[in-house]
Length: 451
Image (tube, rainbow, N blue to C red):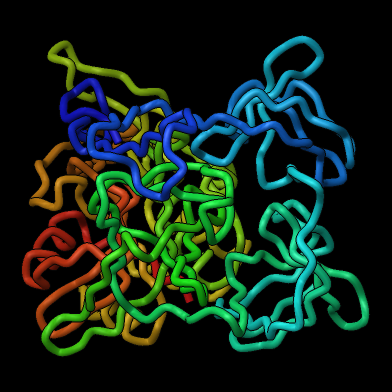
């Protein structure tokens, strides 16, 4: 999140930052880049000539590529959009009234229109999948479907959502949590890129447009395997496809055969450099079929507005209390929010979560073994923390060990703990249980179970 010195609060080493570059060109037609092609770190992709229109009742236009940027206007449903480029986080840079603006690609339709569906069987893969009045998470929730439910699909939209018939009415669900009879569900395994650079495309084939690039060794968040050998994946919050020819798989279970939860992997950067807590909560909620973004959760967290003051040596003298709310800002220089106040946000989307602050790791383990992901306050370095304290204006001493991080525990067996890391962007990281427990205890035994 931030550098490991007194000028930053979480103490995140910048060397831990892993960004995914996209080559903004059409140099190669194949799915794999040649080794001599450099992997640029520019997070943008060339937009092919196509028609783009608004696929929402009203789409906000913002000054930057994220919901935390100021709103500079809006576009009504069906409006044509002059797209300049597509960014790596799924947003579009556009020309708007003579100036540059940005819109969420989730609500943009490109090309000739929606894809017709066939007579395939469509099944819900999430524990609970929200049904909405429109094709996006900004639309009202009108119901839900349980895992394994069959869908009556009308058509597949270009933003990855499905129009369905639900209780006799038109409704919409996210295609990220839908599988078809022509595809194979994914088992608990680690999927990694086995090529110098693997193109991510809008559909399962070379004829589909490139939307990104994954480096060799990158762990994939696989949704399912298509019948033609391609994988449908979650790529920076949107649906993408990669050729299975350049993907290797391996069992993530330990010697005792751990049951690893397939929790979606979400990267906290670039929007939330200090927002590992909101990102971890987004991962856990999306696992349960609650389609909510990390930035939405970050904006909904309670905050402690106490300003930061420093001693003459640069160390922190006074700051906020994470038991009150987030200290600092997740969008920049921030520290953390504790499980108690973060549970207030969780309860808005999925009541029944459990604040495990102060509980031994055995409590965390029990929830994970029951199929429930758990947020755990940990360290960025995956090593023991350094001690640090400050006081609040009211005189309360805050034990602020660093470099602080928040991860999602996805599996436990006799010898190992597995977790998703939003900063290193790694899924099901494997660590010895004894080491994990030592760090967990040193960070104050802070955890939040998402039921």
